[in-house]
Image 1 (cartoon, rainbow, N blue to C red):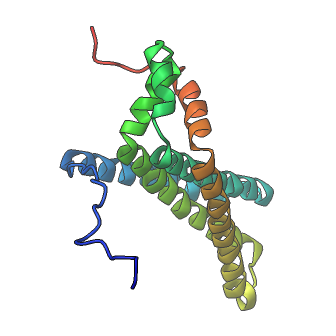
Image 2: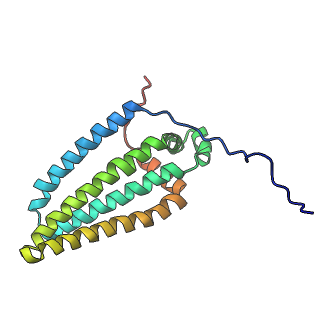
Length: 194
């Protein structure tokens, strides 16, 4: 006789907290994304196009690094546990309050970090890579393959960097949030209190 009996009914799933769809936030992100993308594309076309090749490569690497950094921050905010910061917030330590606020607004924080900044960095790095390829590979017979090579290298660096960043974002989320909270602490912000 089988002593293992199957449980009756479906196993109880933990309840998920649902967030409301915030149309105002979506419109704000949409407008901010268009504005930042337009400004950075203009800078990319006008300023970076006139730089020396070495400087263009440095700017390109900085843009890729910025995209990876914000991807790490966005993931850290989405996966961090706020319990660690409650005692800090209770002791009136500003970093604790900032960390709790960031984690409680994880949807907005990760949207800005991953989607707005991360995606814009991807677009701008692609445009910068194309600009570099056009200057390096001037011969029409190799310009197509040169452009393909530079674009593939930039994509590989971005994707590879983000893959490494995900490890740090998930495994060191609380440490990352604490460092960001320490930096944010020095930014003057309106609290709404008089």
